[in-house]
Image (tube, rainbow, N blue to C red):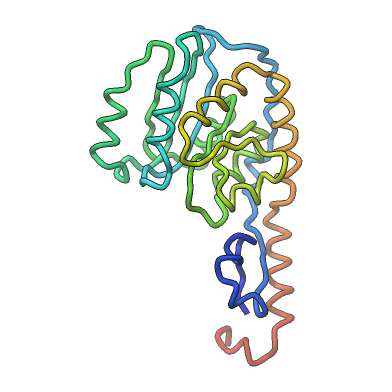
Length: 231
């Protein structure tokens, strides 16, 4: 028997479909606290705070993010916080960060954080961003929806599985589309609040207690011949 953590992962390994099951990860309970924002609009003094925690490998799409920010009008004020292991960033990407110069856009690079400190970053953010184009079941998305953050996500397979039909997506290799999505979410408090509510409801499907129960029940359901690895 094989346990896959997402339907997307299973779809990439269909030869195992008859002897497998999909059981999603859960989310640490400390993340379950929805932030309800009362901000109606943003300004130079109060920019839209976007957070994107991830490594800096190429598939995480930071180049697309920088290109999209560079296309925004000068009256759109953004503070982007990127959290991750800076050792995974190549020299060209670091140089691109260093050369980025827009008065209305502030980019913060933060090296790896503990879960406790990352939780604080989430609580201070207005919007989550997830631009990756290669995931099985992204823990970052699960954490952000459990905080009730409105999210702009790439339309990659496993991301759409988590956020569903009501997710707010951009075409994963299209900087102009991401730019437009940032503008839309910047200007609409109604959209931000709706996405926040939708995402928090979805997060309730990712509970470690349920994950544990399903895993144990699945193992118990397997023929004895499958269980020799556990004895």
